[in-house]
Length: 196
Image (cartoon, rainbow, N blue to C red; front, side):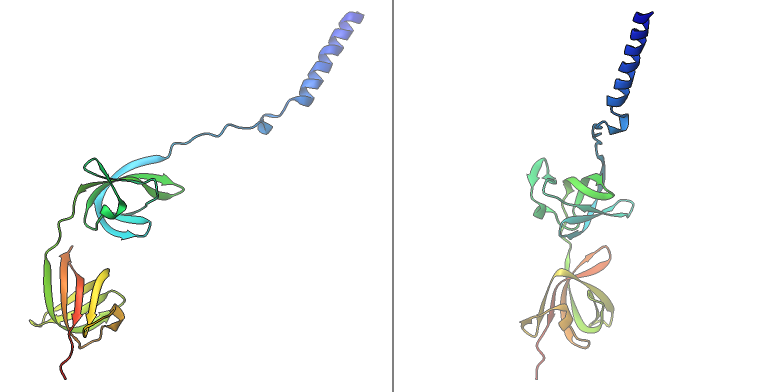
């Protein structure tokens, strides 16, 4: 009887000790779950390049922005190239990684290099300046053409380097343009010196 009482007491003590020293399940350190980021491949044409990102227009006319980081790989025909090998108009396949609702380019493969557009010379006068990137030129044939100015457009105003803000309505102008996607994009804008 005494032995069975001690056995019961011993088991009860053991149960109490286990209850006191056992960590609750929530207090035990959890192992981090490694989630592999989702990836997908997007094919399209580069329509814009900003510092640290590229904008690609898909076949469905959707424009997607991909951030570029130091580990992004750039390839042309199985050869590693630098970011500066990319050009507007180039067809690419981007391996997209979604992290925290942001799209990152894991790799960018150049499929088809851009064909340089045909350059045309427009001559006439400036009839309107719109916003920060458009000039309306009335040509010698009396046709009005909207010309889009890009960051790489150069300006020569009366034999001096100039900028977009220097353009004035009524000034004679010669513009070298490339026509892309139905838009006249200025490569070089010249306002000749006026003869006095």
